[in-house]
Image (tube, rainbow, N blue to C red):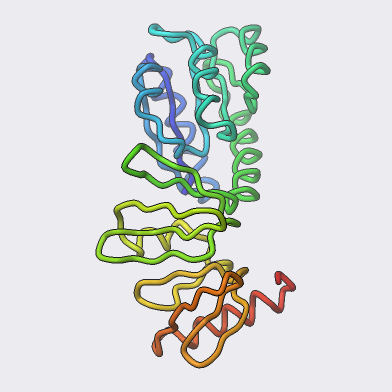
Length: 237
């Protein structure tokens, strides 16, 4: 699923853009989640760095889209940002905030379609790099390559990273859905491991490169062995 946020205070312009995205979804098969804000200030207050694409109207009533985007970039430097404007010359300001592109109102469906195809391709290339989790203090982006393993105790989920631990409230099943299946495997009811850091497998236990011992349940052992074999056969040691 591609998470899209639209910051647009015009009801008519929002519906026009949203309908065009829905049309693209029907034709491409891509699945989108769309959330709208009519205020850039409310958006900035609530944003948790969990969007894949942001469509930002430049001519907003509270603060303009360029200023809002400058503030956005202090907390999310990688989200694909697209300016939406009535005046093409205003979009040149997007270079200062690394905007991916701009579209002019009223939205031309075919230009939007080409843009979405390009952005989604880039998202899929990079989607395995990070995940974002909500913590007691706000949120944290976690680099997948730093995750050794994840364990769960009741509703307490702990990410064991190469340099620290990060804990938050949630379920391991929900956490598992965020992770690329080719790189992570749930080897026990309360454990998920990053296959990259598996050093050896002996009996009912995995040994990771940091010395951690992770149990393998009998019911999950076949899947674990298949994923280990597939991963290392690809040469990703």
